[in-house]
Length: 193
Image (cartoon, rainbow, N blue to C red):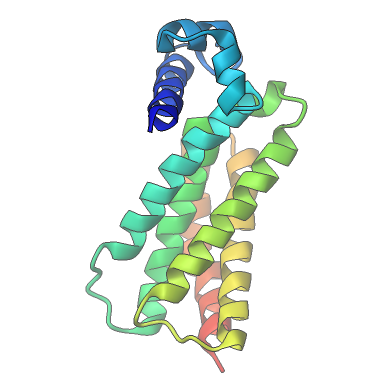
């Protein structure tokens, strides 16, 4: 149990420092000092500062996906429910990419592409698993494959406009365009058997 407390202390300290100073301006020494532990202790639980960031993001993603799935939505129609879930997922993906990781990390980190790819894949797995657990979703394999395709396409589209949009206005336009012009076709393809 002590190990869990130490890990949480490290993550809390890192989160506070990342928010205050940014990922690149926060050192492992500062995280250790804030957590009131030795620097070596951090490396006992995490391989790197990037690993600490990953743990923070995955905690946030797990809670967000759980909330996303378990919030009662008034839609009884499978298509409307899936459409709503995918839009919430897209907003979550964008928030993770833009607000939590931040542009400095993306621009300055040599392995940010790999980090985002791994994070994206983990988000995809969590979403497909969570969606497949919903009572309203069909359970057969071909449907789950199409659901995975829907999540993968939506996630890729959102990540692409998260990186290419210049302003908040561009982002809003891209989200609206995606929701009205692309998502309905992706959802239809996923639920049509």
